[in-house]
Image 1 (tube, rainbow, N blue to C red):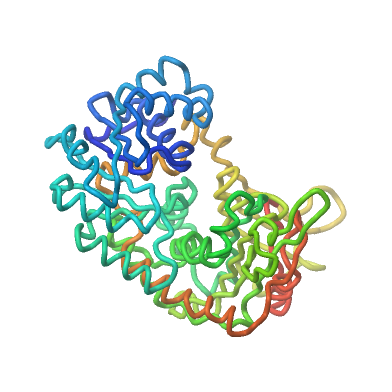
Image 2 (cartoon, rainbow, N blue to C red; image 1 turned 90 degrees about the horizontal axis):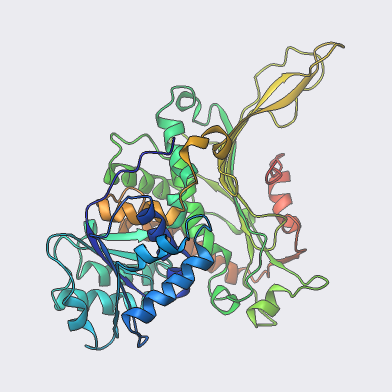
Length: 483
Protein backbone atom coordinates (compact mmCIF):
# COMPACT_ATOMS: atom_id res chain seq x y z
CA UNK A 1 0.00 0.00 0.00
CA UNK A 2 1.44 3.38 -1.07
CA UNK A 3 0.93 6.51 1.02
CA UNK A 4 -2.23 8.43 0.26
CA UNK A 5 -1.64 11.33 -2.12
CA UNK A 6 -3.72 14.44 -1.44
CA UNK A 7 -4.25 16.45 -4.64
CA UNK A 8 -3.43 20.15 -4.65
CA UNK A 9 -5.37 22.92 -6.35
CA UNK A 10 -4.66 23.69 -9.99
CA UNK A 11 -1.80 26.14 -10.41
CA UNK A 12 0.40 28.16 -12.74
CA UNK A 13 3.99 27.96 -11.49
CA UNK A 14 6.48 30.31 -13.12
CA UNK A 15 10.03 29.04 -12.61
CA UNK A 16 12.61 31.82 -13.00
CA UNK A 17 16.06 30.40 -13.69
CA UNK A 18 14.44 27.38 -15.33
CA UNK A 19 17.55 26.46 -17.30
CA UNK A 20 19.82 26.59 -14.25
CA UNK A 21 21.44 23.75 -12.36
CA UNK A 22 19.07 23.75 -9.36
CA UNK A 23 16.01 23.71 -11.61
CA UNK A 24 17.36 20.80 -13.65
CA UNK A 25 18.62 18.73 -10.72
CA UNK A 26 15.95 19.32 -8.08
CA UNK A 27 12.96 21.52 -8.87
CA UNK A 28 11.81 20.04 -12.18
CA UNK A 29 12.40 16.38 -11.14
CA UNK A 30 10.45 17.07 -7.93
CA UNK A 31 7.52 18.51 -9.88
CA UNK A 32 7.74 15.58 -12.28
CA UNK A 33 7.40 13.01 -9.51
CA UNK A 34 4.46 14.80 -7.91
CA UNK A 35 2.81 14.86 -11.35
CA UNK A 36 3.22 11.19 -12.20
CA UNK A 37 1.86 10.03 -8.82
CA UNK A 38 -1.22 12.15 -9.37
CA UNK A 39 -0.83 15.01 -6.91
CA UNK A 40 -1.61 17.42 -9.74
CA UNK A 41 -2.71 16.87 -13.33
CA UNK A 42 -2.54 18.52 -16.74
CA UNK A 43 -4.84 21.30 -15.60
CA UNK A 44 -1.76 22.78 -13.92
CA UNK A 45 1.14 24.33 -15.79
CA UNK A 46 4.82 25.04 -15.25
CA UNK A 47 6.20 28.02 -17.17
CA UNK A 48 9.96 28.24 -17.45
CA UNK A 49 11.53 31.71 -17.56
CA UNK A 50 15.13 32.73 -18.10
CA UNK A 51 17.27 35.00 -20.28
CA UNK A 52 18.10 32.19 -22.72
CA UNK A 53 16.50 32.56 -26.15
CA UNK A 54 14.65 29.27 -26.44
CA UNK A 55 11.46 27.93 -27.98
CA UNK A 56 8.89 25.93 -26.07
CA UNK A 57 10.01 22.79 -27.91
CA UNK A 58 13.67 23.41 -27.01
CA UNK A 59 12.78 23.94 -23.35
CA UNK A 60 10.74 20.75 -23.28
CA UNK A 61 13.68 18.89 -24.79
CA UNK A 62 16.02 20.34 -22.13
CA UNK A 63 13.65 19.20 -19.38
CA UNK A 64 13.29 15.73 -20.93
CA UNK A 65 17.05 15.29 -20.83
CA UNK A 66 17.21 16.56 -17.25
CA UNK A 67 14.56 14.07 -16.13
CA UNK A 68 16.38 11.18 -17.79
CA UNK A 69 19.52 12.21 -15.90
CA UNK A 70 18.18 13.26 -12.49
CA UNK A 71 14.73 11.70 -11.96
CA UNK A 72 14.40 8.19 -10.53
CA UNK A 73 14.95 5.71 -13.38
CA UNK A 74 11.75 3.79 -12.63
CA UNK A 75 9.77 7.03 -12.98
CA UNK A 76 11.48 8.45 -16.07
CA UNK A 77 9.69 6.34 -18.68
CA UNK A 78 9.06 7.87 -22.14
CA UNK A 79 5.30 8.03 -21.51
CA UNK A 80 5.68 9.73 -18.12
CA UNK A 81 8.15 12.27 -19.47
CA UNK A 82 5.98 13.00 -22.51
CA UNK A 83 2.94 13.61 -20.30
CA UNK A 84 4.84 15.94 -17.97
CA UNK A 85 6.57 18.07 -20.61
CA UNK A 86 3.19 18.61 -22.23
CA UNK A 87 2.28 20.95 -19.34
CA UNK A 88 5.46 23.01 -19.79
CA UNK A 89 5.75 26.38 -21.46
CA UNK A 90 8.66 28.81 -21.77
CA UNK A 91 9.20 32.57 -21.90
CA UNK A 92 12.52 34.32 -22.54
CA UNK A 93 12.66 37.18 -20.04
CA UNK A 94 15.12 39.75 -18.72
CA UNK A 95 14.76 40.53 -15.02
CA UNK A 96 16.37 43.98 -15.44
CA UNK A 97 14.41 45.21 -18.44
CA UNK A 98 10.89 45.12 -19.90
CA UNK A 99 11.78 42.27 -22.25
CA UNK A 100 9.44 39.29 -22.02
CA UNK A 101 7.10 40.45 -19.25
CA UNK A 102 4.13 41.00 -21.55
CA UNK A 103 4.68 37.52 -22.99
CA UNK A 104 4.71 36.07 -19.48
CA UNK A 105 1.43 37.73 -18.55
CA UNK A 106 -0.51 36.31 -21.52
CA UNK A 107 -0.77 32.61 -20.56
CA UNK A 108 -1.42 33.11 -16.82
CA UNK A 109 -4.92 32.28 -15.64
CA UNK A 110 -7.08 34.02 -13.04
CA UNK A 111 -8.85 31.01 -11.56
CA UNK A 112 -5.84 29.01 -10.31
CA UNK A 113 -3.06 29.37 -7.72
CA UNK A 114 -0.34 31.61 -9.15
CA UNK A 115 3.20 30.99 -7.80
CA UNK A 116 6.61 32.34 -8.76
CA UNK A 117 9.77 30.39 -7.94
CA UNK A 118 12.89 32.59 -8.00
CA UNK A 119 15.67 30.07 -8.61
CA UNK A 120 18.06 32.93 -9.38
CA UNK A 121 20.77 34.94 -7.65
CA UNK A 122 19.49 37.00 -4.69
CA UNK A 123 20.66 40.14 -6.51
CA UNK A 124 17.73 39.63 -8.91
CA UNK A 125 15.02 39.15 -6.26
CA UNK A 126 14.13 42.85 -6.02
CA UNK A 127 14.03 43.35 -9.80
CA UNK A 128 11.79 40.35 -10.39
CA UNK A 129 9.52 41.09 -7.44
CA UNK A 130 9.11 44.68 -8.56
CA UNK A 131 8.22 43.80 -12.14
CA UNK A 132 5.86 41.03 -11.11
CA UNK A 133 3.91 43.59 -9.10
CA UNK A 134 4.15 46.59 -11.44
CA UNK A 135 2.98 44.57 -14.45
CA UNK A 136 0.04 43.11 -12.51
CA UNK A 137 1.34 39.58 -13.08
CA UNK A 138 1.47 38.99 -9.32
CA UNK A 139 -1.88 39.34 -7.58
CA UNK A 140 -2.65 39.73 -3.87
CA UNK A 141 -3.08 35.94 -3.69
CA UNK A 142 0.14 35.05 -5.54
CA UNK A 143 3.05 33.32 -3.82
CA UNK A 144 6.76 33.94 -4.34
CA UNK A 145 9.46 31.40 -3.45
CA UNK A 146 13.07 32.46 -2.84
CA UNK A 147 16.15 30.29 -2.37
CA UNK A 148 18.97 30.83 0.10
CA UNK A 149 21.27 32.58 0.72
CA UNK A 150 18.92 34.99 2.46
CA UNK A 151 21.58 37.65 2.68
CA UNK A 152 25.28 37.62 3.54
CA UNK A 153 24.89 39.30 6.92
CA UNK A 154 22.21 41.07 8.95
CA UNK A 155 22.29 44.28 6.89
CA UNK A 156 21.92 42.46 3.56
CA UNK A 157 19.17 40.20 4.97
CA UNK A 158 17.27 43.27 6.14
CA UNK A 159 17.67 44.86 2.70
CA UNK A 160 16.49 41.67 1.00
CA UNK A 161 13.45 41.40 3.26
CA UNK A 162 12.65 45.07 2.64
CA UNK A 163 12.87 44.56 -1.14
CA UNK A 164 10.49 41.60 -1.03
CA UNK A 165 8.06 43.14 1.45
CA UNK A 166 7.81 46.26 -0.73
CA UNK A 167 5.87 44.15 -3.24
CA UNK A 168 4.57 41.11 -1.32
CA UNK A 169 3.00 40.56 2.08
CA UNK A 170 4.81 38.21 4.48
CA UNK A 171 2.12 35.54 4.01
CA UNK A 172 3.00 35.48 0.29
CA UNK A 173 6.78 34.98 0.76
CA UNK A 174 8.20 31.46 1.02
CA UNK A 175 11.90 31.34 1.99
CA UNK A 176 12.82 27.77 1.16
CA UNK A 177 15.36 25.72 3.14
CA UNK A 178 15.35 22.19 1.79
CA UNK A 179 16.47 20.78 5.15
CA UNK A 180 13.06 21.59 6.58
CA UNK A 181 11.40 19.41 3.93
CA UNK A 182 13.18 16.24 5.03
CA UNK A 183 10.89 13.56 6.41
CA UNK A 184 12.92 13.10 9.58
CA UNK A 185 12.94 16.82 10.38
CA UNK A 186 9.16 16.76 10.47
CA UNK A 187 9.23 13.48 12.37
CA UNK A 188 11.24 15.26 15.04
CA UNK A 189 8.17 17.39 15.76
CA UNK A 190 5.91 14.32 15.71
CA UNK A 191 8.32 12.47 18.02
CA UNK A 192 8.27 15.30 20.54
CA UNK A 193 4.72 16.54 20.42
CA UNK A 194 2.67 13.46 19.52
CA UNK A 195 4.21 11.09 22.08
CA UNK A 196 3.94 11.31 25.85
CA UNK A 197 7.12 9.23 26.15
CA UNK A 198 9.71 11.89 25.24
CA UNK A 199 8.29 15.34 25.94
CA UNK A 200 8.45 15.02 29.78
CA UNK A 201 12.14 14.15 29.39
CA UNK A 202 12.94 16.92 26.88
CA UNK A 203 14.67 19.35 29.25
CA UNK A 204 17.92 20.08 31.04
CA UNK A 205 17.11 17.90 34.05
CA UNK A 206 17.06 14.78 31.86
CA UNK A 207 19.24 15.67 28.84
CA UNK A 208 22.98 16.03 29.29
CA UNK A 209 23.73 17.54 25.89
CA UNK A 210 22.72 17.54 22.22
CA UNK A 211 24.94 17.08 19.16
CA UNK A 212 23.82 18.30 15.73
CA UNK A 213 26.02 17.17 12.85
CA UNK A 214 25.89 17.85 9.12
CA UNK A 215 28.89 16.14 7.56
CA UNK A 216 29.74 16.00 3.86
CA UNK A 217 32.25 13.70 2.20
CA UNK A 218 32.83 15.95 -0.81
CA UNK A 219 34.79 19.19 -1.00
CA UNK A 220 33.98 22.52 -2.61
CA UNK A 221 35.35 21.72 -6.04
CA UNK A 222 33.27 23.35 -8.74
CA UNK A 223 31.89 26.00 -6.38
CA UNK A 224 35.03 27.07 -4.56
CA UNK A 225 34.89 30.73 -5.61
CA UNK A 226 31.34 31.08 -4.23
CA UNK A 227 32.02 29.05 -1.09
CA UNK A 228 35.15 31.04 -0.24
CA UNK A 229 32.97 34.12 0.19
CA UNK A 230 30.72 32.36 2.69
CA UNK A 231 32.44 29.51 4.51
CA UNK A 232 30.82 26.83 6.65
CA UNK A 233 29.40 29.35 9.13
CA UNK A 234 27.39 31.27 6.55
CA UNK A 235 26.70 28.36 4.23
CA UNK A 236 25.48 25.84 6.81
CA UNK A 237 25.34 26.98 10.45
CA UNK A 238 23.38 30.21 10.12
CA UNK A 239 20.58 28.47 8.22
CA UNK A 240 20.50 24.65 8.11
CA UNK A 241 21.94 23.88 11.54
CA UNK A 242 20.11 26.81 13.07
CA UNK A 243 16.80 25.37 11.86
CA UNK A 244 17.62 21.94 13.29
CA UNK A 245 18.57 23.55 16.60
CA UNK A 246 15.29 25.48 16.69
CA UNK A 247 13.14 22.41 16.03
CA UNK A 248 15.02 20.44 18.69
CA UNK A 249 14.88 23.14 21.37
CA UNK A 250 11.55 24.90 20.69
CA UNK A 251 8.65 24.91 23.11
CA UNK A 252 5.43 23.10 22.11
CA UNK A 253 3.38 25.48 19.94
CA UNK A 254 -0.23 26.04 20.94
CA UNK A 255 -1.32 24.73 17.53
CA UNK A 256 0.42 23.20 14.55
CA UNK A 257 -0.02 26.29 12.42
CA UNK A 258 2.67 28.19 10.48
CA UNK A 259 2.93 31.22 12.73
CA UNK A 260 2.62 29.24 15.97
CA UNK A 261 5.54 27.01 14.95
CA UNK A 262 7.64 29.89 13.67
CA UNK A 263 6.98 31.98 16.76
CA UNK A 264 8.50 29.23 18.92
CA UNK A 265 11.50 28.86 16.62
CA UNK A 266 12.15 32.58 16.83
CA UNK A 267 12.11 32.41 20.64
CA UNK A 268 14.92 29.83 20.53
CA UNK A 269 17.12 32.07 18.35
CA UNK A 270 16.48 35.05 20.63
CA UNK A 271 17.43 32.92 23.66
CA UNK A 272 20.85 31.91 22.26
CA UNK A 273 23.79 33.15 24.29
CA UNK A 274 26.59 34.95 22.42
CA UNK A 275 29.29 32.43 21.43
CA UNK A 276 32.90 33.27 22.27
CA UNK A 277 35.79 32.28 20.03
CA UNK A 278 36.95 29.90 22.79
CA UNK A 279 33.83 27.82 22.12
CA UNK A 280 34.49 27.51 18.38
CA UNK A 281 36.77 25.26 16.32
CA UNK A 282 37.43 26.06 12.68
CA UNK A 283 39.17 23.92 10.11
CA UNK A 284 40.20 23.80 6.47
CA UNK A 285 40.90 20.54 4.66
CA UNK A 286 44.43 20.02 3.40
CA UNK A 287 45.61 18.27 0.26
CA UNK A 288 45.97 14.52 0.11
CA UNK A 289 47.56 12.18 -2.41
CA UNK A 290 45.53 12.41 -5.59
CA UNK A 291 43.37 15.27 -4.27
CA UNK A 292 43.54 19.05 -4.01
CA UNK A 293 43.33 21.15 -0.87
CA UNK A 294 40.54 23.57 0.00
CA UNK A 295 42.72 26.50 -1.06
CA UNK A 296 43.30 24.94 -4.48
CA UNK A 297 39.57 24.34 -4.89
CA UNK A 298 38.87 27.93 -3.81
CA UNK A 299 41.53 29.36 -6.10
CA UNK A 300 43.11 31.35 -3.26
CA UNK A 301 46.44 30.11 -1.83
CA UNK A 302 46.07 32.32 1.25
CA UNK A 303 42.36 31.74 2.02
CA UNK A 304 41.37 31.74 5.68
CA UNK A 305 37.79 30.63 5.02
CA UNK A 306 36.68 27.63 7.06
CA UNK A 307 35.44 24.42 5.45
CA UNK A 308 34.68 23.02 8.92
CA UNK A 309 33.23 24.62 12.01
CA UNK A 310 32.20 23.23 15.39
CA UNK A 311 30.83 25.20 18.30
CA UNK A 312 29.23 24.98 21.71
CA UNK A 313 25.91 26.79 21.88
CA UNK A 314 23.72 27.47 24.90
CA UNK A 315 20.01 28.27 24.98
CA UNK A 316 19.39 30.59 27.91
CA UNK A 317 15.85 29.70 28.90
CA UNK A 318 14.07 27.70 31.58
CA UNK A 319 13.97 24.43 29.64
CA UNK A 320 17.60 24.28 28.50
CA UNK A 321 19.72 26.07 31.12
CA UNK A 322 22.83 23.96 31.70
CA UNK A 323 22.39 21.72 28.62
CA UNK A 324 24.85 22.61 25.83
CA UNK A 325 24.19 22.07 22.14
CA UNK A 326 27.25 21.13 20.09
CA UNK A 327 27.04 21.95 16.38
CA UNK A 328 29.46 20.78 13.69
CA UNK A 329 29.56 20.76 9.93
CA UNK A 330 32.30 20.29 7.40
CA UNK A 331 33.48 19.24 3.96
CA UNK A 332 35.67 16.26 3.01
CA UNK A 333 34.83 14.32 6.17
CA UNK A 334 34.74 10.55 6.60
CA UNK A 335 31.22 10.14 5.29
CA UNK A 336 28.08 12.04 4.36
CA UNK A 337 25.67 12.10 7.28
CA UNK A 338 23.30 14.47 9.02
CA UNK A 339 21.88 13.71 12.45
CA UNK A 340 20.63 15.07 15.74
CA UNK A 341 21.87 13.08 18.75
CA UNK A 342 20.19 13.68 22.11
CA UNK A 343 22.26 12.34 25.03
CA UNK A 344 20.26 11.68 28.18
CA UNK A 345 21.80 11.90 31.62
CA UNK A 346 23.01 8.71 33.25
CA UNK A 347 20.96 7.25 36.10
CA UNK A 348 21.76 9.01 39.39
CA UNK A 349 23.01 5.78 40.95
CA UNK A 350 24.40 2.59 39.40
CA UNK A 351 23.23 -0.44 41.38
CA UNK A 352 25.21 -2.92 39.27
CA UNK A 353 28.82 -3.93 39.75
CA UNK A 354 31.21 -2.36 37.28
CA UNK A 355 30.63 0.58 34.99
CA UNK A 356 27.65 1.10 32.71
CA UNK A 357 28.36 1.61 28.98
CA UNK A 358 29.95 4.99 28.39
CA UNK A 359 27.38 6.24 25.89
CA UNK A 360 24.28 5.66 27.99
CA UNK A 361 20.88 6.45 26.52
CA UNK A 362 21.04 8.36 23.27
CA UNK A 363 18.27 9.20 20.81
CA UNK A 364 19.60 9.67 17.27
CA UNK A 365 17.44 11.29 14.59
CA UNK A 366 19.07 10.57 11.22
CA UNK A 367 18.34 13.01 8.40
CA UNK A 368 20.56 11.51 5.71
CA UNK A 369 21.53 9.31 4.02
CA UNK A 370 19.23 6.67 5.59
CA UNK A 371 16.43 8.56 7.33
CA UNK A 372 15.29 7.08 10.61
CA UNK A 373 15.38 7.18 14.40
CA UNK A 374 17.53 5.04 16.72
CA UNK A 375 17.31 4.82 20.50
CA UNK A 376 20.46 3.50 22.19
CA UNK A 377 19.47 1.69 25.39
CA UNK A 378 21.39 -0.11 28.13
CA UNK A 379 20.57 -3.81 28.54
CA UNK A 380 22.08 -6.92 30.10
CA UNK A 381 24.75 -8.53 27.97
CA UNK A 382 23.17 -11.89 26.99
CA UNK A 383 24.64 -15.08 28.45
CA UNK A 384 25.84 -16.40 31.81
CA UNK A 385 28.47 -14.79 33.96
CA UNK A 386 26.64 -12.19 35.98
CA UNK A 387 25.05 -8.84 35.29
CA UNK A 388 27.17 -7.26 32.57
CA UNK A 389 25.72 -4.21 30.86
CA UNK A 390 25.92 -3.37 27.17
CA UNK A 391 24.23 -1.06 24.69
CA UNK A 392 21.59 -2.15 22.18
CA UNK A 393 19.80 -0.18 19.47
CA UNK A 394 16.09 0.18 18.93
CA UNK A 395 16.20 1.09 15.25
CA UNK A 396 13.47 2.53 13.07
CA UNK A 397 14.91 3.06 9.62
CA UNK A 398 11.99 4.41 7.62
CA UNK A 399 12.74 2.39 4.49
CA UNK A 400 12.58 -0.82 6.57
CA UNK A 401 9.88 0.09 9.08
CA UNK A 402 7.44 1.74 6.68
CA UNK A 403 7.94 0.02 3.30
CA UNK A 404 4.31 0.66 2.39
CA UNK A 405 5.09 4.38 2.22
CA UNK A 406 6.94 3.84 -1.05
CA UNK A 407 9.96 5.83 -2.20
CA UNK A 408 10.80 8.71 0.14
CA UNK A 409 9.95 12.14 -1.19
CA UNK A 410 12.69 14.57 -2.03
CA UNK A 411 12.47 17.58 0.27
CA UNK A 412 11.71 19.87 -2.67
CA UNK A 413 8.66 17.78 -3.56
CA UNK A 414 7.04 18.42 -0.21
CA UNK A 415 8.01 22.06 -0.02
CA UNK A 416 6.81 23.00 -3.50
CA UNK A 417 3.47 21.35 -2.85
CA UNK A 418 3.25 23.26 0.45
CA UNK A 419 3.65 26.48 -1.54
CA UNK A 420 0.68 25.52 -3.70
CA UNK A 421 -1.34 24.64 -0.57
CA UNK A 422 -0.41 27.96 1.03
CA UNK A 423 1.23 26.27 4.05
CA UNK A 424 4.23 28.23 5.38
CA UNK A 425 5.02 25.97 8.37
CA UNK A 426 8.27 24.66 6.87
CA UNK A 427 9.44 28.02 5.51
CA UNK A 428 11.45 30.71 7.28
CA UNK A 429 9.83 33.98 8.26
CA UNK A 430 11.59 37.29 7.71
CA UNK A 431 12.14 38.08 11.39
CA UNK A 432 13.51 34.56 11.91
CA UNK A 433 16.13 35.09 9.18
CA UNK A 434 17.17 38.43 10.64
CA UNK A 435 17.41 37.05 14.18
CA UNK A 436 19.67 34.24 12.95
CA UNK A 437 21.99 36.74 11.26
CA UNK A 438 22.00 38.98 14.34
CA UNK A 439 23.34 35.99 16.30
CA UNK A 440 25.79 34.84 13.60
CA UNK A 441 27.34 38.18 12.60
CA UNK A 442 29.39 38.72 15.81
CA UNK A 443 30.73 35.17 15.54
CA UNK A 444 31.87 35.71 11.95
CA UNK A 445 33.38 39.09 12.80
CA UNK A 446 35.27 37.37 15.61
CA UNK A 447 36.98 35.09 13.09
CA UNK A 448 38.78 38.11 11.66
CA UNK A 449 39.31 39.89 14.94
CA UNK A 450 41.15 37.04 16.65
CA UNK A 451 43.52 36.57 13.70
CA UNK A 452 43.51 32.78 14.06
CA UNK A 453 43.50 30.81 10.80
CA UNK A 454 41.45 27.62 10.45
CA UNK A 455 43.30 24.50 11.58
CA UNK A 456 44.27 22.13 8.71
CA UNK A 457 42.65 18.68 8.80
CA UNK A 458 42.94 15.53 6.75
CA UNK A 459 40.37 14.68 4.13
CA UNK A 460 38.36 11.58 5.01
CA UNK A 461 38.70 12.18 8.74
CA UNK A 462 36.50 13.71 11.44
CA UNK A 463 37.77 17.28 11.32
CA UNK A 464 40.49 19.28 13.09
CA UNK A 465 41.89 18.36 16.49
CA UNK A 466 40.46 21.54 18.01
CA UNK A 467 36.96 20.18 17.54
CA UNK A 468 37.88 17.15 19.65
CA UNK A 469 39.33 19.40 22.36
CA UNK A 470 36.11 21.42 22.34
CA UNK A 471 34.34 18.32 23.63
CA UNK A 472 37.14 16.83 25.74
CA UNK A 473 37.41 19.89 27.96
CA UNK A 474 33.75 19.28 28.90
CA UNK A 475 34.52 15.58 29.46
CA UNK A 476 32.42 14.62 26.45
CA UNK A 477 33.19 13.27 23.00
CA UNK A 478 31.71 13.50 19.55
CA UNK A 479 29.52 10.63 18.50
CA UNK A 480 30.92 8.55 15.66
CA UNK A 481 28.93 9.60 12.60
CA UNK A 482 26.66 6.82 11.38
CA UNK A 483 27.20 4.59 14.43
